[in-house]
Image 1: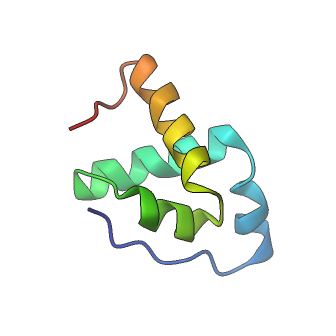
Image 2: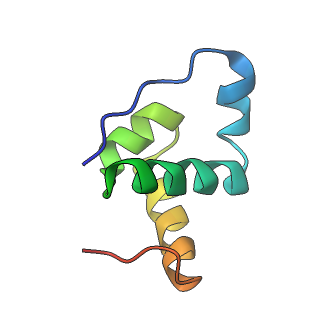
Image 3: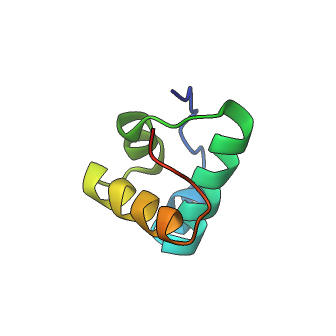
Length: 68
């Protein structure tokens, strides 16, 4: 599970709408904390849980993460 601070400026929120940026953020959080929580990522990035799940699925297909 991640404890994630919300983005603080508009530029970072805008970047959350770019899949590669979201996925890099997700990877960074996994490296820092070991696991991620879909709900918290969704809130932090201001995107739907479905979007986060799609990003996680793409990262898993590339062999970068695995579902536990």
